[in-house]
Image 1 (cartoon, protein in one colour):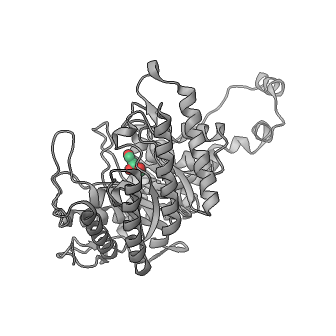
Image 2 (cartoon, protein in one colour):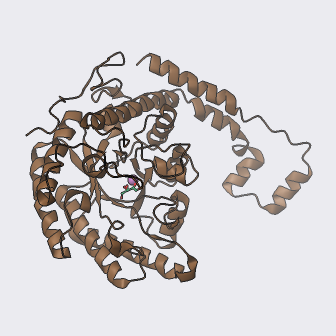
Image 3 (cartoon, rainbow, N blue to C red):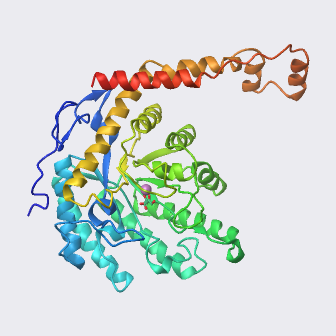
Length: 441
Ligand code: XUL
Ligand code: CO
């Protein structure tokens, strides 16, 4: 039975199309550089926002009108799978992502939860046999249930640590069964509220123990997907351990985990940390740790995680610039960890929102590709750091200079000459590329 009766397959119709249910810029087969748009962008639908989210917020109940609303329990879970594959096909998306609790309700016991999961995973597996849509990643929800009130792997209660381990063990088995490209760790409740009751060292050690156990178990069962850490600075806890890429990287390196993980960078998490999206992508990229992206955007006027669908073309351009410079996302993708606004409660809005996000990243891809082809920033940057390719700068970089040598050099220097950084001119060039490329789309 179709759930989205009013909607047919969404196709590319070009930038002048007035059809709201068509792509204007995302043309999956079109080549950009040596790959198609579909191969570059690897779009993914987030199960939780699109099939589970009801639009409730701290001030009001749900508003979403969904054709599966009348079902309950396992019937609801099954209806959502049917709706999901219908939407995947109509949007022609290559990937999806889920938390365990998104796909199946928790039972009275862990055993019953496993049973519910098994039933739905059987169904997903069956659908995936004939669908092109693959699993980008799955994860375990270790934050919603009251048992995780003090954290999961960083809980003060060892029983909770064990329970969380069991959920991740099951998640890895599901990932292996469904051929997931990645497995995500977002430390929802892994943080603290006050140091007055917190053994910070034990909590961090335990988090590392937990992740090492996950690495070991993936090896044991032969799951070869990429492990991803998703940093976020706050929400729900005041101080989250995986604050941003820099702090999570230090954690991974401290505990010998850096070779087993990459990052899943979420735009709105970057901005909550006081960084730009592109800063977090760059930080991960230069360390060889850029794995995947949760594609969304925040609101500059609000200080919380609004998870909007991405429509800011500057942001998608600079994000795609980092991704192209990274040589692509490998096994990662662009997952729309984004939700329609509370007032956008009709099913059509789910399609409009994904179309908006996919088109915005398609524009970003094309502009970024042109910027890189023309070496717009590279030439400026090469010139700006030229002093490190010759003379004393070269000695600094090659390690043949020490403080004695540098002091002797500095003592004979005349007045130091600096050059302008030319930020404003570069921003104009960026605008020109955005407008020029958009005009030729
Ligand atoms: C929360 C968030 C999560 C993770 C997966 O802000 O981004 O949905 O992506 O647990
Ligand atoms: Co996310």
